[in-house]
Length: 121
Image (cartoon, rainbow, N blue to C red; front, side):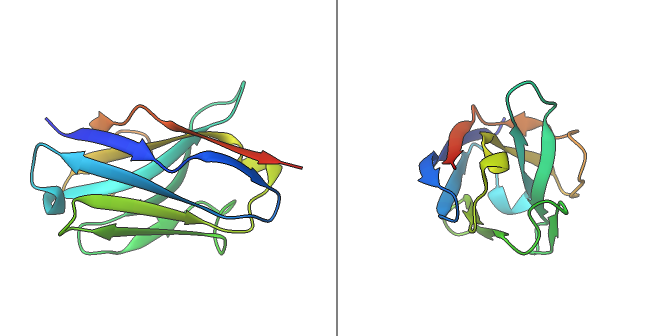
């Protein structure tokens, strides 16, 4: 089992920044591909960004150039630096983990509880 806990969400104005963290415990963090997803009100959950075990990154077109995903295997933590935030980024953000291989669909094995990000216009 892998336990994931997100933090860092909050309320920010358009154009502002936030950094989300995802702390993992329970297994060897470096064995897992990690990802961020989000779910906006009345919308389906969508892929935001992912990072492989060795640091290769993937982004959705909607956040490319504004968000940066990273991981610190020594701290068992993944991050999402979000810059130039827009109202349409408002959502609950979830971190996810799966053994070995990164994917950009939602077929991840472990999920956090989510953290709310609200961007005011």
